[in-house]
Length: 267
Ligand SMILES: NC(=O)C1=CN([C@@H]2O[C@H](COP(=O)(O)OP(=O)(O)OC[C@H]3O[C@@H](n4cnc5c(N)ncnc54)[C@H](OP(=O)(O)O)[C@@H]3O)[C@@H](O)[C@H]2O)C=CC1
Ligand SMILES: O=C(O)C1=N[C@H](C(=O)O)C[C@H](O)C1
Image (tube, rainbow, N blue to C red; front, side, top):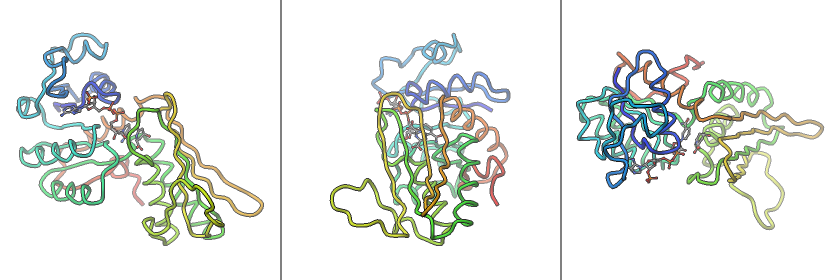
């Protein structure tokens, strides 16, 4: 299957190019950077340090549309939506890792997914997706007696907060507890907040240095606490998940899928 990477010069883009190169069944068909980038025309492999691939970076998805079957997009919400529209109109599959989408943007994405297969997940690592199932089990067993707090840390360049993964963790826990995250989430407390209510789910965000991605869900009550933690130490863990998603998409019908579908982790 021929893959295009958009945002090719980004932190994830470079690692995704390396991952495609190391994945049987996938070949790099195109790499797209910002239209004004000085990298347009440069070899995608040479940019990432894996050596010449023969794929010259383009500044436009339209220009390379004959060169790929599946697009992998880890960029930012506006651009990802534009790309999803492009894929739905041109018979291309798409794997999306972008986080920070609004509810309206997610609804728009679901409409594009009626025309083409889409995998959309805030975290493509196998580890985080297994943790989501552990959280579902823990929350259902612990119930309302345990306070839930979600703490995440990422590198200083990250633009959205809380992370998409933290929010998904919150959704999974809220759902297992019969709550609606929109009604019970509390973000970054400050000032004279009063006592914690028993049903709130708190989010704390750390942005510092080069942290790849740490997530902890804390369940605490009088007398004990449980901390479920995942720490990513390399972006390759996300990129490998994206490769699995791309391979999994082959032959799938239109629809909105996530990594739980790809990894057969759905209950
Ligand atoms: N689902 C998952 O497993 C993971 C998701 N993510 C998510 O992926 C996203 C990207 O993260 P990260 O790689 O760190 O971000 P980066 O900012 O490093 O990468 C985004 C890239 O897109 C480029 N870009 C901007 N406009 C265009 C355009 N029109 N065409 C092509 N490329 C363009 C940017 O270029 P420039 O800098 O020049 O503007 C940049 O190189 C985030 O939403 C992040 O949360 C990250 C890791 C794992
Ligand atoms: O921006 C990042 O880097 C990451 N973003 C994702 C998120 O928002 O959950 C996943 C990962 O933790 C890295």
